[in-house]
Figure 1 (cartoon, rainbow, N blue to C red):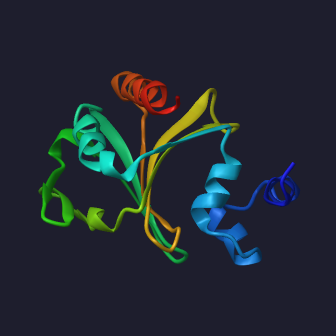
Figure 2 (figure 1 turned 90 degrees about the vertical axis):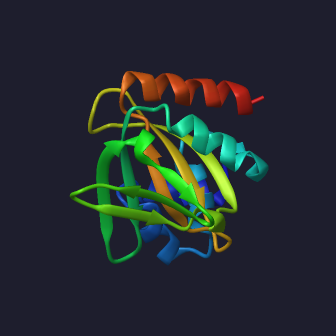
Length: 155
């Protein structure tokens, strides 16, 4: 067992960001270690992944840093790319993600002890290893798309 996994087991209630404050490791590596299953998608597949994401139906999107968390539920089909930005414009909110800063794309699956089943998320991290955007596959169609991506890239 890696030292990182031991630290996670000793601190089961800490988030990846809180663990990162305790140890010198990129957040993305901590999230991989916290997951039951992790598949990395090659960065050159970013456009294909974003195209796939548009077919996920309604998704829950999480954007956060150490001081704030924003969760939005919206139809993934509303996302569109303009240059380095991925956008979703709605009468209630505007979402702008600098998707060009993506350096790693990860599919993470983890048992969810608060609810039955597992959490499945598509994660985008930057050069510093910060996971700046996470998209949860919650609907049946999103779960199926997620499963297919896991199979496609998990080999």
